[in-house]
Amino acid sequence: MMEWAYSGVNKTVPRNAGPECAEFMNPIWRRIETVFVLAFAVTLFKWSYSRISLPTVVYVRRDRRGRRTLLVMMSLIWGMEIGYKFSSRTVIYLLNPCHVTTAIQIYLLAASPSKIITAVFRVHLNLLNGPLLAFLFPETDTRIVSMSRVYYEQ
Image (cartoon, rainbow, N blue to C red; front, side):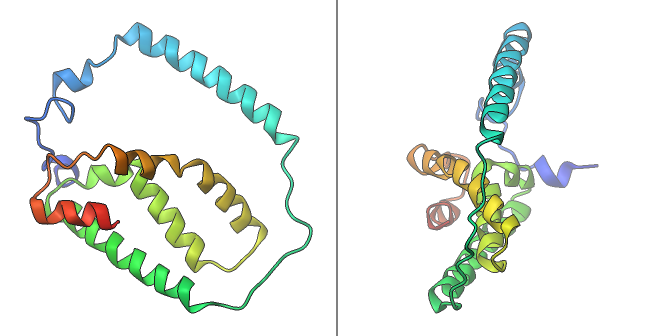
């Protein structure tokens, strides 16, 4: 039923699909690691929740052309990437952190300033290491040459 989302994944690359990918970690070690990471995350959430504050003064600047230009360019490039994912039947990869971060950035550029936008922006700052890592360690070995150019443009 969902073949359109993942049937284009190159299964010959061991880290993309297949038993080697599924059995990357021992299930017991996976559970142990999950418990420790969740405990650490809950501790950090409790510690940081009391320190969260929003600015009291809202600075609303007039709309600049640079922001609109960036919004249009990011939307076009991200649209090309989405088109590529659908044409290559690898839509499942749109859930990668770099694509999610790009969607959040497009939303932030298009939205009007508010307290919710400030909160989304702060969460977004924590996700910025994803695109940096994707740029430093690209996974383009499963792409058509012309489409790996779009990867770097995004």
